[in-house]
Image (cartoon, rainbow, N blue to C red; front, side):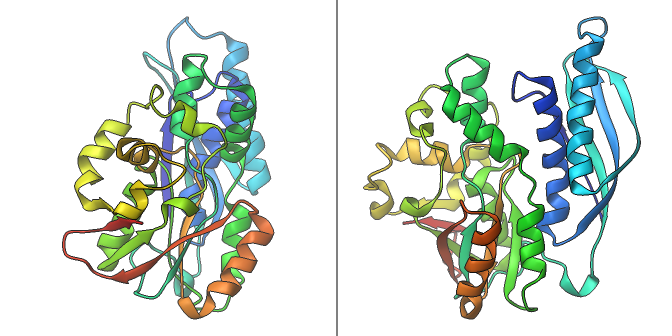
Length: 296
């Protein structure tokens, strides 16, 4: 199995940026239940505008995360670009009988999310120096955290305990949930009050919307339906604010897991041991015509 991902800096510190880029690139392997083995670095830097120390720090940060994941760096390729870009192409292995995809969710399944959302909002606030230090620390710690432990916890469960899995990245929670629903022929029901978000992110929603938000809303917005119950959530002050949070593009986000309803408690115990911020966020129902995701 192979995957590739790279992006422009989301934080100011180059070493941390390298760490996050590596964790993000590896995530697809973990989402499928695989083990990452090797990687090739992919980098773009402006000519004469980035000092050698910054470049070295980015590569050191990435290598540290690869080493944490047990991944061997085999080489890579660097090109001249107008802006910094960094990431990896990753190769992994998986048991063909235990592959997890986003296409297996079934009515009666219970949904879990292993990390809070809001990294796109925080990243935008960082660029404009509007993010509180505590919120930055929390979001960065989450983005640097590999999905390895959650993946290994799922692999240790009996076959059939988990029906589907995907990682939450650029399409946001609503987008990736929509893709799971569409691929599985079901409707995913998310509970607004149960969706984990970084503390303080709600205060930044109005003025820190990332560049990818608009395209996510355009592509997935019509397939995501909000109920009156969701709109009266004590955490959200407007329908648009809720949509911003749900469609916010994530970097190195958590896993969205559709667990067999009969195994839900077993799955919850397993992932909470290794990912304490995990939450039960909803369930899966028979397909509602035209609705991928229903927010209650």
